[in-house]
Image (cartoon, rainbow, N blue to C red):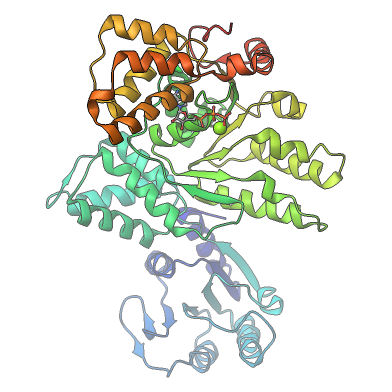
Amino acid sequence: MGNYVSTKAEIKNYICARTPLIIVDSSERERVERMLKEISSELNIGINYYTDSKQVCTFNGDIKQDVDNDPLGFIAAQFKKNRNSTFAVGDIKRIGEDNVYSREVLNILYLAKETNCTLILITADTVWSRLSQFGMLTTLEYPDMDERISQINAFINMFGGKYTIEWDKDDIRMAATLLRGFSEIQIDNILSTTLVSKRKLSKEHLFELTDQKSKLYSAVASIQMVNVNRALTVAGLDNLKAWLSEKKSVFFASDDALNARDLTTPKGILLAGVPGCGKSLSAKMVAKEWDLPLFRFDLGTIYDKWVGESEKKMKEALQFIDNVSPCVVWVDEIEKALSVSDSGNDTGKRVLGQFLFWLQESKSRVFLVATANDISLLPYELFRKGRFSEIFFVDLPNAAERKATIEQYSSKALHIDISDEEMRQLVDASEGFSYSDIEYVIKDIAQLALIKGQPVVTQELLLQQFNKLIPISKSNPDSVEKIREWGIERAVAASSKSGGIVK
Ligand SMILES: Nc1ncnc2c1ncn2[C@@H]1O[C@H](COP(=O)(O)OP(=O)(O)OP(=O)(O)O)[C@@H](O)[C@H]1O
Ligand SMILES: [Mg+2]
């Protein structure tokens, strides 16, 4: 596992030690070519190189020879003639198992060993074990943070004169974070496509990079990409919002800054509380505010009756998440999925253990937002420190939050001005309502206005409809009270003042 610098140093060492075979595990051939070219000049050795399109050539352009798509004869002849020589192959096929071609490569390796020569193979595929025994394997990872930053800077230098690029140092760092998991060529493609289509690069284009990312990976059944409406607004929940805006800078801090203080990125939050008060909506809000792609992880689909299948599915899902990071992962109604794991069957417990272990140990920049109504169903292990960064309790909206919600929905759906006195009446009438209750009443009236015309929208109608609705806090006071008791005692309030009074 290595970045450009460490992989290059490794290859240099292997060449100097005259290892017969060096396997460079990478799907980025051009990047490895560039590296070999640098090595060739730094060590002052000629490296012959083959690909189907180039045939045999040297990096300094001295030799060019067509070998009719079969370099093996040429390599054998070279190794016989020139001791201590090096040959690299960029297009190597059919060497995953024992076959005629692999045997021919094997013979070349015996020869290389005798004549102190080195064969370098660039491949992302597996190599037949008898071949790999001859050499050393080195893996070139996709560009790391520093490399991505330099690549973006180089891109800006190249196009900054022609197009407006408004990214400052922090934006470049953010772009580099978002482009994790892409090859050098993909990064160039994404930057160029975004630049060409928008004619400029500004802050607002950062999230476009994450959209590209979601297109790249093939889906895993238990995980769906959720498109987040960029105009989404959430009323109230000021504590939660303040916490998120503070943690955003920690989530996007550089590895160096985090390491210097022995920190990891925030792992995620558990949002518990009264139905209809914005738990699910807040998962989307995090993705929107942090400009990250949002993936919904359906834990329920992980459980499988066949032995080993659940573990396999969980492993695949967690690998997928690690790959698409940085991202927000949303597990909705986590208690429903996890209570399966409590049904006394071992698979459920193991899979939950796998999930919790990943949550604690994963080094990827993944922010988990889990929501729950009935916390009593959740396994105790989930609450241990180090799992979630914080557990928030989402309560019924207080008067100020109800006002904000009425303003938000009435301005969008009702197109009316509400006086201070009218607003006070509506805020009073909606006591004990959830945010979604308020939305429901207002949208209901908006539908009426659509059918019958704007004049039907009056303060009287609003008050009448608010008074008619029986919110869950009245229809089901015991269950709401139970949720609130738990939340007030064991979690941090998502709003700075206590919620609506349940009568
Ligand atoms: N804080 C809020 N601001 C604005 N709208 C809200 C808010 N909370 C809820 N809503 C509205 O109510 C709808 C339902 O909210 P949401 O699905 O987030 O509730 P929830 O807490 O997840 O409820 P449940 O426990 O039933 O899943 C949202 O789609 C949104 O339209
Ligand atoms: Mg919900």
